Amino acid sequence: MKIIKLLINSNIYISFAAVSLTLATQVQLGLNIQWHPYLFLIFFATLFEYNLHRLITLLTRSDTILSDKYIWVKKNIKWFYLLVLFSVFGFFIAVLEAKMIVLCALLPIAGLTLFYSTPLSRTTQVIFRLRQIPYLKIFIISFVWSTVSIILPIMQAEKQFNNFHIFTMIAERFLFVFAITIPFDIRDMDADRSSALKTIPLLLGEQKSIQLSLTLLHLFFITTVIHYTITSQWILIAAYTISFLSTYFFICNKKLHPLPLYYYGILDGTLLLQGALVIAIQSIYLIY
Image (cartoon, rainbow, N blue to C red; front, side):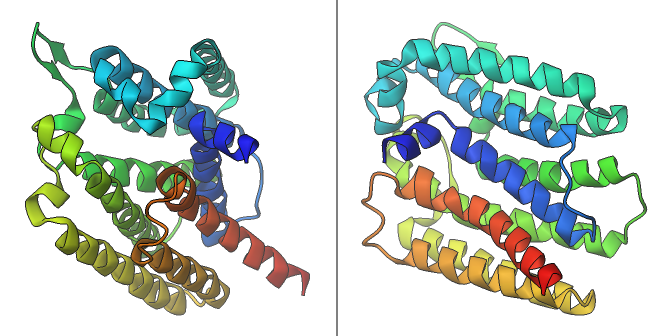
């Protein structure tokens, strides 16, 4: 359990989830699963961004140190700073090894991600970040996850792919990430209200937000079934069916919500699980 908490609190866990989804993209594109420098680029970029976001929040909002997800940082502040430096070092090593076309594709998305966490302006009373634009936060998160994990493998392959196939893949991932991010905003309703941050749950209320999350999850599943029926990638439907059913259960089961690791362990874990399912089912299919 200590190792699991360490992986989650250090954001190594969510970084592996990003790599997992990107490897799944290789399968969706009909490519052989291969390790390329851009996978390390995604891992270290995710690790850096999530820890940078946490660091900036700590520096600009000292009250957050009292919340559960920042207690680990407070207790392990030296290791936390080393982890940030490690992610920067690893990122630059990966940059040196990655293809230029991959870096060019990553650059605008990386810029958007940095502006999401980094203050754009500061006065004595106000610190503004891109995420504070009303209702924009969840769209940025969904967009970044869906584009990075799909566009970079395409750039790496340097092949022509069907546009319908690509745009549908991006839509699927966008819908899924959007669906699992809504519960995070529901959890943060009180903090967002006190910070005057406008979010979808504050606009719709908790119950309607859950309904929206489940609706998006259903749209994700329907899209995958139609998509992989058209492309005759039948085996992928099995992976996404398991992903859909397990995620639906995690969101609907209120008994799970109070668990300490529900959000950063279980909900974030649905990203890791989805990628692992696609990889595992494809591997089993190839063996048999």
